[in-house]
Amino acid sequence: MNKRIIKLVFGLVSLFILESCSPEIKRNKPNVILIMADDLGYGDLSCYGSEKINTPNLDKLAAEGIRFTDFHSNGAVCSPTRAALLTGKYQQRVGIPGVVTAKHHRHHGLALSEKTFAESFKEVGYVTGIFGKWHVGYDTKFNPIHQGFDEYVGFLAGNVDYHSHVDQEGFEDWWSGDELTKEKGYSTDLITNHAIDFITRHKDESFLLYIPHEAPHYPIQGRSSKAEREIGGKNGVDFISFGSEENKEQLYTEMVEVMDEGIGRIINTLKNLKLDKNTFVFFCSDNGGTPRLASNGPLKGFKGSVWEGGHRVTAIAWYPGIIAPKQESNEQILTMDIYPTLTDLIGTEKPQNIDGISFKNHLLEGEALPERDLFWKHGVQTAMRLGDWKLVLEKKEAAPLLFNLKMDIGEKENLANENPELLKVMLEKISLWEKDVNQVGQIY
Ligand SMILES: [Ca+2]
Image (spheres, rainbow, N blue to C red):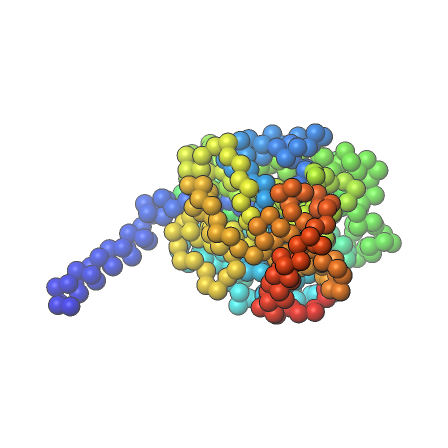
């Protein structure tokens, strides 16, 4: 290569770096808002068939974008799904196969050495914020501000009293960054308010906003409910973790509807600031709905199980002008696919050595995803998906059960005896996967 060519290449590279850092270029990068409901059932939104809960704002996003029917949380409970979301990897691989509770795991959390999607966004100049539930490490050393988020207000545990913001173990749990803070208000509204404030303050920058809502996780409390938990209070003595209100069904409906109302306010903020055409919004739940109050529609089982009701969840993508409206997707997608999809959308480097795959081309052009094996593990329960087939192992020694989800979404008819070869193949794949994620025989 002669000197003139080297000079030219150097000049072009310098120009690219300069351009990348200029405010004009930064404004052109899309903003990203990721909203995660907590324990929302597959049948809990009106656009997913609920007849008692009204969610006009999420229904509108679905009508203007894509409603997913075969989207799955990585975990059957909170922490594992959040670990997979943050890292793009199976949660077993990053040491969060089960719930990180306030009581037993103060020392335990998502390792700081794991790269999160927030860190990828920061690398390319995004301002990053998280408002709501963290739940991958209670100790302040695991705080979101050490995992790529510039701003954080919310709680670290699995749930807090919606009014007093005290967790299940009686600890005060409402933070601004890595410091405890006092803030009055219903947590769902506070999360929405902080999100809107963040968007407004950063309207001229490219931003990443992660909104992990508390709703509709227990305690079952509405805007007018009384605070039940006090600092130092004992679960089962001073308060019931699920909440003591009698009209729980009505309150559960209110909890989902207040979250939906807040999402409507967030979308209106984008429209008022003329950011709606340059902001990708993705909504999903972190696991299936809970017994008694949630509806998982036609699905079997609830949160905490590897039946479909434990992990098939609602999901909506909205990006007006970029994603065509009125679409329904039956692609098999997991929470861990969100990270590489987001980096793909903003045109930055894909994270290395992850399990998730980008579904950007599916979002934008309807391209089908490649066929792949998918796995779920919760305690002693294991499940695997291969196309329309799903294998369920309720415990390690249990007889494997086989279902064809295309014909039988409710997992009612066990077809294991009719398909011995397929069963063998799937069991072998599970065994290899377990070895791969290094969790053989581990029970949580
Ligand atoms: Ca959850």
